[in-house]
Length: 356
Image (cartoon, rainbow, N blue to C red):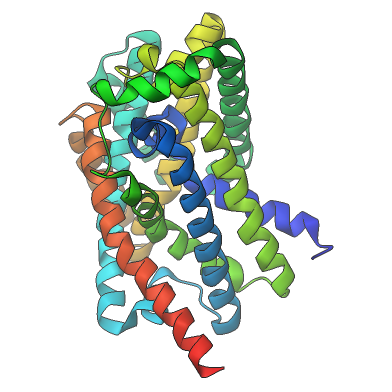
């Protein structure tokens, strides 16, 4: 293995930060992709972990060997010129849709914790994002390095405390969840892991090849491809266990993680709501920046107009449906498209093997 652990930890942290959004931070991803299937959630976890490790290594390695630095280059490399261009434009549209989901998640968090009206919470987040993008992205990138790990650690602490106090309810929750009205991201548990990985692939396929172009050691790539997915899915497994053990308390809430925090320590739950809000903020802002920076230069009137248009569109989308329902529509649809990327990666790797 590698002795360059500082690089491994830094790149693994970047991978985790990319996968932290309103879905993970609020617990809705855990509920809809995993918890809803009861005991089978743990089989889905294993499938998801293996697929994330495989795709992470393939994407980073491709970036190193072919000097890939943009998402379009990555999509063209794995998917060909036609599908690659389609996925490039689809990813930009997807970012706006995901931003709407995240605005809704921020609004649901403020509503559940402080009874802030949904439109006001979504509007506040949209305003913060617009101001940040207008003033420049440098500061938010510094904040991301702090908020992402903090959110993961606090989530694990809350989930672990909840499991410790409700572990006896795990068997009951796993057997009873099928009888509750919980939204499903996929109709069958065997699809859930694949759709979850497909959902995150447009994002990681945009970042990991660029990461790979900066790595000079295959051992570092292997370590990152193991550690990054292991950390994020390990945290997800703890959250799943906590939600199953307290399923009757959390299943009807928009922000299940916040319900766990309130049950463990009400005051702590109010503080944690603020951390969730900041975590969503640090995820949304760089996402929207990738579109704005592609079509205009920071500081120009065109850039400002694009920031305003995209943030307003996402805000309007965030107010159409409750957060859980919005996530249930948009995230699985991204997952099915992401399966095209997964299949393309597998085919590309099989062709490499055949040439050996």
